[in-house]
Image 1 (cartoon, rainbow over the protein chains, first blue to last red):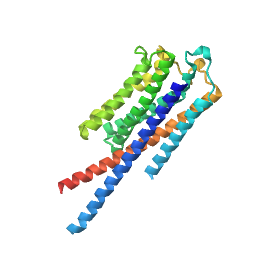
Image 2: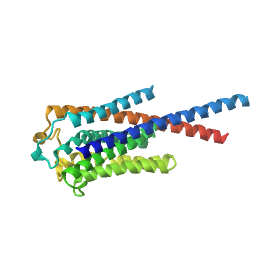
Image 3: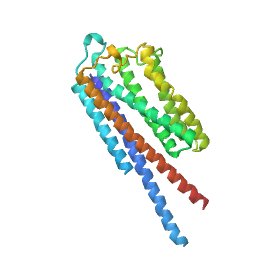
Amino acid sequence: MTYLAVAYLGMLIAIGLWTWTVFSRSNDLEQRLQAVERSIDTIEPEQE
Amino acid sequence: MTKRLAETILLLGFIGIGTTLGLAFLKAPSVSINAFESPEAQRIFYWHVPAAWAAFIAFGFLFVGSALWFFKRSDLGWRMHVAGAEAGLATGLMTVWSGMVWGSAEWGVPWDWTDVRLNTFGLLTFLAMFLVLGRQSQPDGVETRDTFSTFGLFGFVLVPVTYVATRLWQIRHPGPVIGGGDSGSLNGEMALILLLGAISFTLFIVGHMLMSMRITSLEQRLESIQEAMDKV
């Protein structure tokens, strides 16, 4: 039973890590996109 | 909206998977000691079967996405291809890993190279790995997408072969426990926990694929803005 519990726990941790990676990739990209869009908004009025 | 929906589905799936594993460990009835070398290891089946089910959903998604890109040049199709490949790799590894844990306990070896189902499923997982790593190492473009979509289209042939493998050539992998005729041996409680697992894994993988499609869309938007800025 011990090795089964370890295998189960390992698999849960693995999918937890995968999910966390996906969430952090999504948040990171969102922030980068917002930063780029903000910088474009700043540049455009200056050019006008 | 899509983000919230995807996150909610994914988290519901994750909680469901945790609950399934808890029930599998603490509530599921034990199997006959005489029928198995390692009866307790059988409980890994509540992870292994739903993970394989989720892998087939992911490979189906990959196939549809590849076809949509290849024949219609659809951007949505490409995003489905990317999401299906990533989800197929993750669920494929979950299935292979859990199967190897069970095989080690029950057969004494983690893998049997003569078993058709093990090998066709292993190949499917390798195909998904090739698609995920290949996409990351190549510049995005029509030729790259065409090449990987072709693999996604033809690789799908392995799905029906894997599904019927234990019916046609049962070597070592156990036969079907649902829809397998007289060989099916699930009692009510086992079937309920398995059903919860299947629903949870389905939610989990659908949530992941929606998140992955959103990530690809954000990457493409960022890339197109950066290209436009470089031209100015």
